[in-house]
Image (cartoon, rainbow, N blue to C red; front, side, top):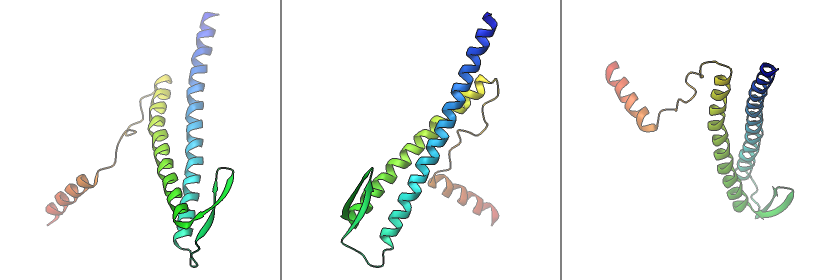
Length: 134
């Protein structure tokens, strides 16, 4: 009976971890959709052929009328918050995936914590590569 309880506890922990990963992934999709909608709204304000003094914008369940500049500022501020929230979930997700793989007695995902080269590092690489090709 003790072996069955231990097995059930283990399976429960694995399923709980996997569920957290799926919830995070679905949250990223929802936030990314909102980020894309904001990007389209900002582009619509910028490309407006007949600029108006004020425009309607949805803020949660409310619809308010603000100047186009203020609407653009609000959307850009929201973009920053969405970007930071998505980045935080992404970094937490990497840890959760490795924890799940550890629980399943698998190796960590190779390259999961790689970061892109900075602009400075990329310039140094380009200089190095262009110096050898000459």
